[in-house]
Structure formats: structure tokens, C-alpha cells
Length: 398
Image (cartoon, rainbow, N blue to C red; front, side, top):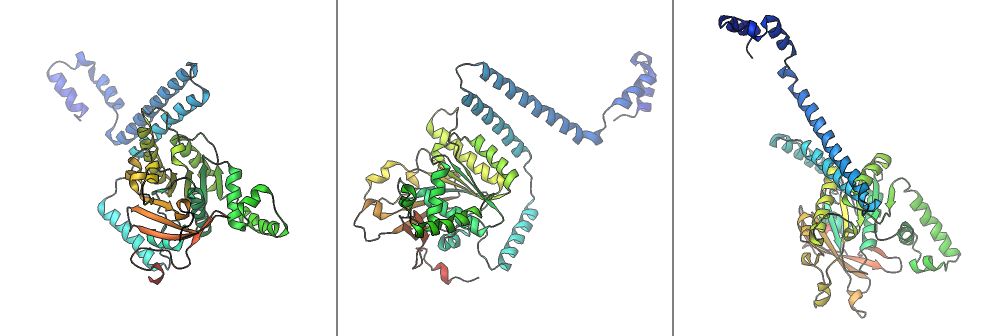
């Protein structure tokens, strides 16, 4: 900037000083000129005012929706949540930290040193199934995990088994379950059957003797130990915005989760999309962003297309994912459940299920065998070592 003395002399030399208001006026202008030293503060004020203007636009849009009598209260709320969700996503993008390659390398080496020093190979959230945990090193923070199957294969039961593994393996953290399909009571009945080893059909009918009640008491005590850690939300009208809002609310109340389960993805709504494919793509992208923002794995259950039923080999693959190829693209780990006894009553493999890992961004793929006990809808470790990885995970050492 030109010093005020130099400027005044230049103006006086050209007989323009008085015409410009004189030296006193120049001094006043100089005093009121913002300093470059405060430029970051000024920029922050501009960003804040810009956000407030955007919120004002959203507020006016909400008012317009309210006066639009053809929209229900739920539709107005969904529009508002989606608009606010997009604004908050912009904040996340703008606040993203740039990390130099040396800093990123230091962080990586530090994690590798910690993993090497530990006797536990599980770096993520454990599922309670040793073969799967060895194959994946646990469900990793920020990952989107798809668990897909045809009806009656046991998607919900498998996911609940993983949730139990997370609760037992990460006792300082919580688990959030967004059960869009099933009410809380049904979900708790399944959990009680799994933990107490009382047949689910007997729990439903109330056909219970003293032996069953003793088992139920023990199972109920175990479940009660997870109060304030196992959080079930059975709201049936979920959008990406409501999932994010509720998850953040639960984090404030119950602490950081080790796992978020969503049952199931195709029941999440995303208003404003032109077609179902775009809607599922947006939901998939939002769930991936949710896990990354909250720093925990997101386990999303998914349906499969009916075309799998028309093949001789009914084991599913990535092409069977329903409604959108975006699911295959966004997911970090894709797993399928296959039980031969669902299709073949005289199967040679009763009580056996397969977990097919068809995609894993940071690890191997393969098929794992587990046991399934339909009386309790319970998946458990296969006694002979459920793996088809080219090696026996039980013989690997650190």
C-alpha cells in the first residue's frame, strides 16, 4: 500500500490534495482501511454470513412447503431434512483437512507399529466369527459393508450376530441398529432367543416351562447388561438425513458406536430422485459418507434381484444386488449369505451356511462356512474351520 505521506505529497504536487478532501480526510481513510493481517478473520465472517443466507433460503423454502397444502407434514419434514443434510455435507467438504504425504505416511507407520506390537490381529470391529475377522481384520472404521441375501436366508440374524460380536469385542463402545423393517419387540425376541438358546417359536407362542424360564432369565440378564450400549431405532420412515441426524444424536447421548446396522437399505427413502436407481445410488453414497464422517463401519442389509432364483447355482454374486450398480461401487466389503437347505430340502449340508465375500477393498475374497441353527435363528462358527481361502486362518501366527 502507498504510505499516506507519499500519497498526500503526490496529490499536492498535482494540486489535487484539497480537491480530494485534504490531508485530514486521507488520514481518516487510512485509519478505516482494513488490515491484511485480519484477512482470515474477514474471510471467516463472509463464510458465516454465506451459511446464514443459505439457511435463510432453506427456511423460506420450508415456509413455502408448509403453505403448499398438497404436501403432508412428513413430506415437508423430509424436504427440510434433505436440504439441511446437503448444507452440512458442504461444511464437511469445506472443512476437509489437506494432509501432506509425509504426514499421511507417519500416521500409517504409527498404525503399523501399533498393530505389530499388539497380539490381536483385529484392527476394526470384531464380528465374533473368527474366520471372517481374520479375513477382514474386523469391520473397518468408515467402511460401508453390504450384507445381501434372498428372503429367508437370515440377513437380519447374521447382522445381529455381528452386532453381538461388536458389543462383546468392543465393550467401551455402543452399537446402533436402525430397524426399518422389524419393530423393536421382534428384534429383541430374536436376540433373546439367540442369547438364551430358547426356541424362537416357543418364545412367540408362550409355550415355556421352568427350564425355558431359567434360560430366559439368564439371556435377559445378558441383554440388560447392554443398556445404553445397544440402541435400537425402529422408525419406519428413514431418509439419509434422518439416519445421520439420529446417529449424531445417539452419539451425543451414548458415545461413539463400533457399528451401525441398517435393516434394510431398500427401505430407506430419498425423496426428489427421478427413479429408483438414482434413489438407491444416493442412499448408497450417503451411507458411505455417514460411516466416513462418524468414523465407524456401517452395515447395510440389502435385497437381491429375483434372477438369482432362475439359475442352477443359486449362490449370489455382485450382479444380483437389487436396484443399482452404485451399491457395488460404493461398498468396501460385499458379503452374501447362501444356505442350500432353503432350496433343497434333502440337501447334504443341513444346518450349514456360506458367507460369500465377493468384494473387499483392502483384503481377500472367498467363501466362509458357518453353522445355522434355525430354532434360534443363530449363526455360529463352523466346528471344522469355516474357510475356503487357500489357507487355514487358525494356523496363522503373528
